[in-house]
Length: 319
Image (cartoon, rainbow, N blue to C red; front, side):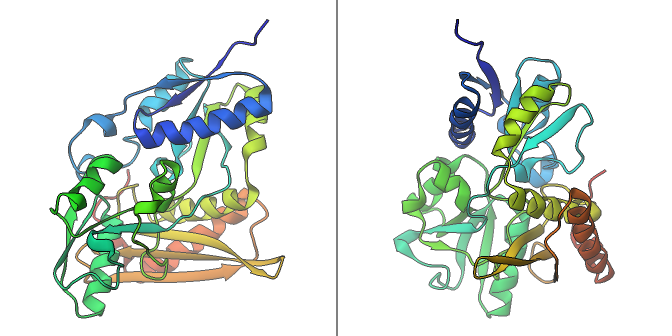
């Protein structure tokens, strides 16, 4: 007799379905059980408002979590950068698989790289974080750049360039990879120019805290380095009391000497969306061995950033 299929809750977008499908195949390999995708529409999918206006925190996540709590699905897959920093006690973050490329990617007309964009270029993005850093770069290089707020799926956003409405759009490299569109990327933005969103490029796999056997099985997909890195990044975000749509960038990466892991570096940035002010700091220390150590790393950098004036730059403050 075939074992009952596990029900995986996912958003309906092409990207969400692609990344959930990848997780589903890995879970089947691990458990031998079939996995059925259950499509769930979230508020963030139906609202046409810009994320900063609807308060980005949780808009793509709440409906999935509600389905988990109601027992309608067995586990759910989220883009980690969409996940609120507060973890409900009833749910467990069972796995954070190995992260894909955390960088942002540029898709520009005529194959232009970021450095080749003309003065006055119109660049589309739905992210205040990207706007702040792109505008700061333009200001520091004496360029004029217009950042245009956009919404929509990958096809819609790339369409603005193809139709000539925008000179370029900026999207997460990992998302483009998961839907097989990296061949359209004209440049990858250096993290020295634009720090990604906390958790960008990583996935989060959640299940009910009471389902210990499923949590244990899903934990096989966990990557410990990715887990501590995103924990530090999200701790920074939480300590800044900033929501998912606030102009905050963070990246923790492991520094190695050959094959030997030496230290972890955490970089954070908060900026005014017009690029007039950026608070950009970093800290380096031993690779956190525990969740609490990773949390402490993020909190410590946040305290330094707040002391430098970060609080006044964030607009939306998470409640």
